[in-house]
Image 1: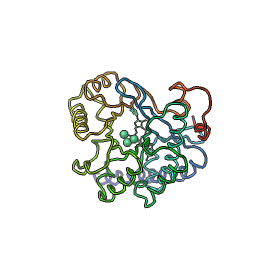
Image 2: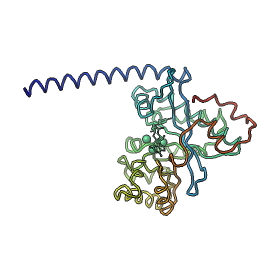
Image 3: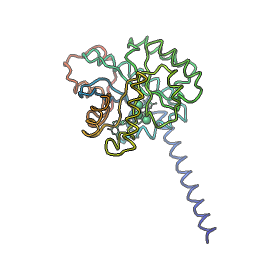
Image 4: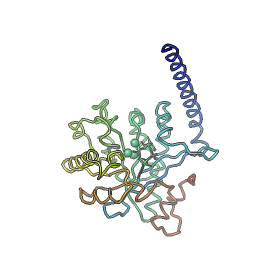
Amino acid sequence: HAKAAGRNGVVLFERAMLADAQDKLTLERDLALALDNGELAMHLQLQVDHRGAPAGAELLMRWRRADGSMVRPDIFIPVAESSGMIVSLGHWALRQACEAWLALAAAGHAMPLSINVSPLQFRQPDFVQQVRAVLAETGAPPHQLIFEVTEGLLIEDIGQTIVRMRELAGLGIRFSVDDFGTGYSNLAYLRQMPLYELKIDKSFMHGTPHDVNGTAIVQSILSMAGHLGLRVVAEGIETQAQASYLAEHGQPHMQGFLYHRPMPLGQVLERLGIAPSTPAGAAALPAQAQ
Ligand code: C2E
Ligand code: MG
Ligand code: MG
Ligand code: MG
């Protein structure tokens, strides 16, 4: 009996794996065409200061298939990473960020823009050169760009990572540690890196201020960042209670649905109250999906 059930379990498991592998192949194949087919767009999510005023934005990739369905980044970004496609997508995303910055600036709303940089992209031998080229071609100011990296990048190949980060910091680029607290970064190493910002992961904000454990982590990140002289952005702010807590504890910048959802650049410009004249920078930006 037990043996039969075990065998059945194995068969089911294999089927699930096969289905997964099939899905992954389909996603990989479709994603390879998505950029050329105009199915990808970069949305922007405004971040606010403790008074609720816009203080920057994060660019987030969106994939809308031809049939109108959306694929979540949690699904397609890992596929793009394992297939290597993230390198070209990341390069495209960086250019979009530069162009978005120019459009915002032309409308009188220059603000730092954050962009997620995947470890694979960061480790490309010509990454610094690519960044330099995009900056030169677009004319976007490097000190207005924040590269969000994850703790995973900061614990592997630390020597190389630091050298490269310093090189990019030399250009003016700033660095933020995304999803801070969910990885295993070594605090001693963090101090050697040219960091500008920590982003408190939304999983810790979720229970703040009601859950004791999450709140304790939020509090210790805020205090550590204060000691290290780092700026903090708290992610996943959905409630007034969370915002009020942060207003009383360090007043970090905030990013979350309570304030602004990710949206196409056009909607961000509308939200910020832009004069209708079309600036040169905006014209260069292709129409966003959605
Ligand atoms: P992330 O970099 O940590 O981005 C923040 C995520 O939190 C975004 O999810 C955003 O939509 C979501 N978010 C913002 N405010 C709230 C809130 O109040 N509540 C909740 N529940 N969620 C909120 P999104 O856009 O689905 O992206 C997921 C992840 O995919 C990102 O996490 C990032 O790791 C990755 N990703 C997205 N775009 C890119 C990209 O252009 N390049 C790379 N390498 N990764 C990207
Ligand atoms: Mg991010
Ligand atoms: Mg995050
Ligand atoms: Mg993340």
